[in-house]
Length: 376
Image (cartoon, rainbow, N blue to C red; front, side, top):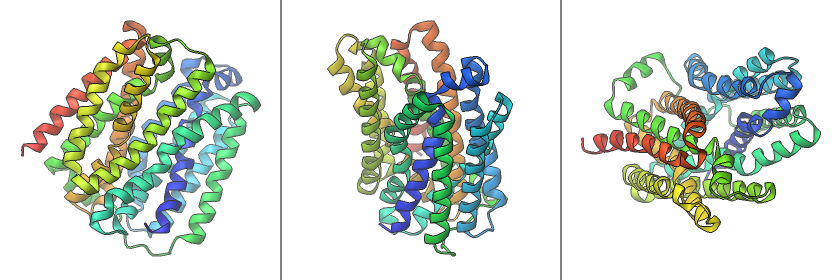
């Protein structure tokens, strides 16, 4: 694999950590800004909406730029947003910083378009899995570390640390990335073309439903695990870390399976396994080992679909890969927000131990989208 892919993965690790770091320290954020926990949680929504709406606009606006310059702009926006969050004296300022960060997250689809452009077609799945490995590692490394720093030294400390890491990534990209990379940019005309393509629309629908299914549960993984098998904080931390490790394994295996079996066959099996695990999960109450077995397989399937989905889109039109990947990332964040919203309401009304069945509903809707496309 080209060394550039590992630099892009490191950047995605920093971006993923910054994106989700507040999830583990919302309580100290709320106390510091003197707002409710629900109000502080709006910072997660602000980021997701900016990723879904503003990031594609930046992608289109920089379509004629060199890819290196576009990545540099994305990192500047992300670092600026992190610094604004670290300084924020009130909630509106924090939300503005999160919006800047979400806009800077346009880095991820640009990086994905570069990844598929600099390798042979047979290696695109592996290249995408390496690039997205950073996002998966942020769940295993970044989230626990950020939460520990925030709870021990105050929530502004990890925010400043992530801003510093983003600036370091900016320096490395400026020094190590070639000025010209043979990867296409996004155009408004290209956006119109891809939205008229039936397979693109079905792929985006699958991403929306898939991540809604995953994040209905993942957003409330702590309460779900405690509802099924009450445990100590130390055991819960270990459980979350093991689930994160399974997610990393899923990211890597998804890329390998895509190159070995193709995106359609890989997605078919991932969706089937995810659905089965969500059906079984509520039955594991009182059996920690059974719960861990089910949820580790669930995480492997849940976080393994990014590479085959992106590869499926690249197969439609490699030239339009940037806009395709940006739209796919938008659906990812819309799914994250939708799953978190539905999961919160369902957890209160039905009980958190039943959230996997709610997520199963989204997975089945995604399956309908997938099977309809597979028959054509």
